[in-house]
Length: 69
Image (cartoon, rainbow, N blue to C red; front, side, top):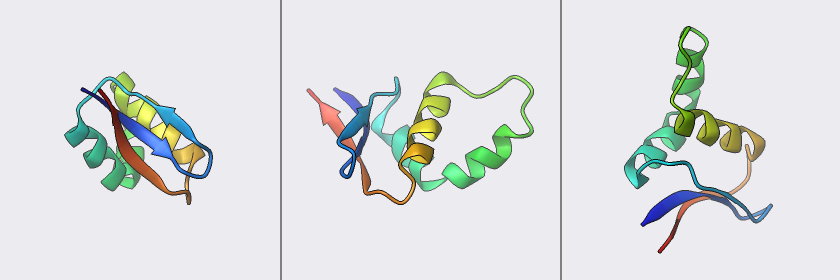
């Protein structure tokens, strides 16, 4: 199965290439990940960058983890 984030207000979905557990972790700790990203010279994994960008665009919206079979 493939998991992603879905915004109820905008009806937009993103499918980062990672697990449900990692998406939950990122959503719960996005403020920490943003701070760490400021201090990394090599950058973040693609799925983290993609997930953070989605969460930032939909800040304050109802975003949940969804799946496609």
